[in-house]
Image (cartoon, helix red, strand yellow):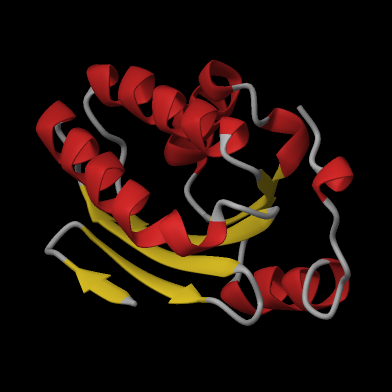
Length: 141
């Protein structure tokens, strides 16, 4: 499944159990709420088993403060619905700080990895997720 909007896009890889995301621009609270609603729909085929996400944040800019709380709740939902790994591509110091606040709000710090390039992130995904046999017991709560 592919989903695209002006602020985000998703591509679900059922075989690998990964959702690939691209995030763009400066978000307002309504954008974050729309994103969560669309994400929940897109990721449904994956949530019965542990799954991973690779998020390309290269086009994202620091967002409005109320977005941190919404995305923190989104990440909590992900964790509660079998997300086992969150890989993030980001090279902006101010957005890195905000992203860490979101990890903290969602309780996903231990599941989240951040890289400066897409190549590093994809290498990590391949080495640590792809072709891995995952059981429900592997998911950290």
